[in-house]
Length: 491
Image (cartoon, rainbow, N blue to C red; front, side, top):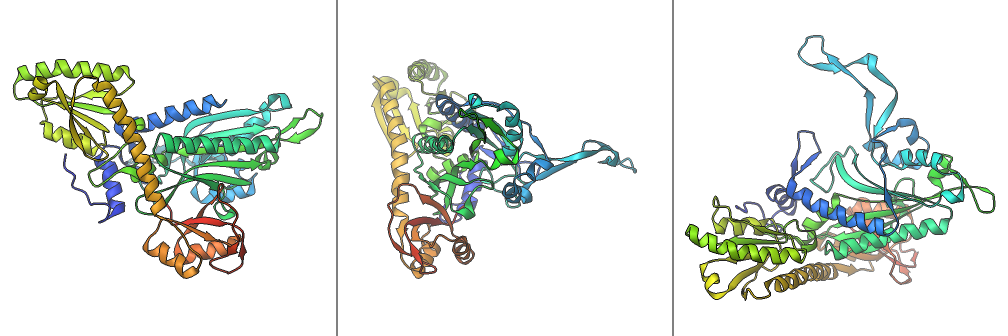
């Protein structure tokens, strides 16, 4: 498989886009800004989905499904929410087409105009809280811990495969609680789940924190997030968990009778991750040779390639290879035996390297004689010849090593690209010439954050939860600050 695409250093954006397409993950569709997720890419998303779904269910959540279409009037009920999403909404105004007067096409049938226009779901808080009004009467009906897997539409002007598309896949949790404390506990619990998934499955280290008011979800009291650092020094928001307070309960008049027999508004959360995680996975680990996948999320964890000249040799190799495949599968490892005779072994090696298969086993006539197998690992491109005895255990241990090594490599990169600065000149120099996460004091005002963004394109990615209080002076205004925050340019 040809690797005719630029290196990361030559053109990082083009490298990413070409890699997504050439590795058969996704492609642009006929609809501007929308993508087709191809089977190999969707197989990775399915693994992400299955893992997260289990984590949600293990923590007491259940799945449901809510409508794709939302009455436009719902959005006007929560002022900051509609303001935050108004520019991205796709609106359905008619429900029928008819033949055009010239008979050469179709036009909107003006007699089929909807009485109330419908918004194509950009997020589901409004339709869900209108529904919850019917579900909740008493404290006995709480908590509601619901998640849905769905697609959403946000009419983005500048799109990039997986990272920002007009339509994308995600999960969105929407929970209802009797107390503020329970809702905040839920928000932080989900944040921990997201961080655990990112670090233990994606092998991507993340920072947990709270968003500044400028970066907060529209309609939330507080937005918590996990932030990851990509290889080009830009940050990527990998997941968010929102404490909504009673904003949506008040907007949709959702009350419950408390244990004290008082009528009170419900407390709410919402949270979500999307196919943007695919972009994070690609950019955090892949190299100039193609895709690099952590074993836990690789659709194919091990590929076995036979090397032969004669058909009799293939038959002998296949007998051994299929036994190896069976032993590995008994350990829960996904294995592909590629005995296609339409491609040479060298082409197969290149293809699986490019597609990021974590481990490749090659077996030839000499291996049969010596009871050996050649083992190649994708992350380091190192190869070694091992005895076939206990090969299943050896490969399983190797997959575990690769998973850990990818995490520590990404963590080391993040550490090397995290810089503390104390002056405006230092800040500008690091943002312009090095990138990465910049730890700096900020005076806490949205106005200062906006000015910093205007002058450097850097935003406050998160106010870290685990950072100690530290007195200092804002890099921009010189006013008093009690804590450093994380700035970066971001996707």
